[in-house]
Image 1: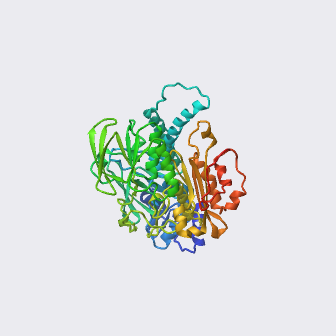
Image 2: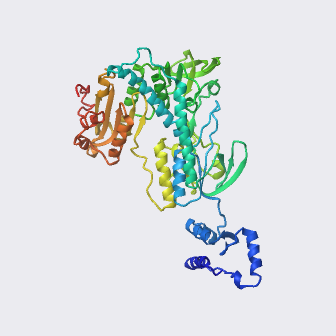
Image 3: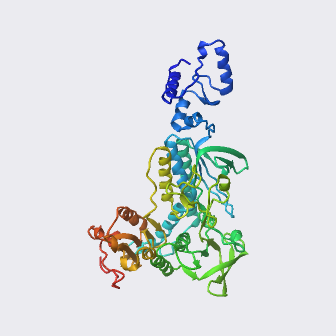
Length: 570
């Protein structure tokens, strides 16, 4: 072993204070025979050919890489277990993809496993998870479709001479266009993984040991893989009701966006953001929509804002059936769409009602996909009530080499950008020596109801619970977007509110906006919230005129004063 490469390996072991036996094949009798034997054993023709504790490492490059990855130290310490991968990520959604690509960029050998269990209706989708396929992306595009319908009506008031006959919407055209775009994203994700040398496997992963998984593809073929570390990013799926006919005849958001036919008269069951967003855009397409609500709208959000968003929907044709829960769904007639009969019971008594609909959309929440991936075999603790995984502030489970990110975390935001941020930062902490952790405080978000609701920080209810009403000052205002004035619609229906902590220099601890382009407005103010925004700083900020966002720079009326918040003029 007299090559320059061999010398590099010798120097490495010398630097590590490791004694090694060196066999110079070109200096011993039968050296060629040993070389042939080594070739047969390892498939390696070149030297040096390194073995540690009876484990073949390889040549110079592989030895150096093993040292960089920490595998060499494991072998030298007698930890003979060499894993197939440095990291296996279970789940190919936003968080899993972000984490896997970041780890690969840092030189790690990474596998991503992603498998979509078909819905009861048989629907599946490509790589990218809920957000891309059956969540944020198609939802926002169909919300935009509904907004365009309103814009067409507004256009006449602005002088556009459109045909007098009713403008019609074609569901199939929209559905095809949206799904074609999603398909391009699916392909892009696969290419990105390939370019970064991440091994993507379309199989269902299940732990059989703490460092070993079984992967089963759609044909039932099983393969087995090991890794030094694992990241769980399996996300959630819509919850069903557990009543007669729910899985047989109802759909969820997992089915809606690829529905081959217009849903027709629709009953939306639930008051989650998914329920109100879907009910909102379906009504915006001109469909007859009823939302069945068990208790409150948008649980966990500011209830003042939630009720205003709901009232706006009601004023624009969405019917709300409050204090009822479905107990049975029956098929009256098959078709595309067919006819369904829904029986519901009052939450306040024994009264039951019946109604006929073409489509029933269930949107009562989501369940974590953690129950059937063998976490018990790996020793990972799970909250038995909701399937969520408790982690520390570094997304680490109770099993040190297994981490979790995204919607399956106990007590964390169920938002795509949160999962992406957590995934990237986790990879950097694991493999780049970084220390920055994901900040789950003051995360801005938007509910894309017909009149959009953006929020950052605490709801009014939560702020009162934490600080007490006497220590808060709530500023609020109605407003009328300039764009709405010429069509003369929704006068003073938009609403803004900030919640300030009087004990902390008037710091803004809750920021709420109900109006057009809520996501765009909230993103900028979200940065300000991160920087410790105060009411004085808002007052000293010059607004951009004429915009909706400028309302926050001129708010003077407090809730406690009871003053008039109606806006007039510009």
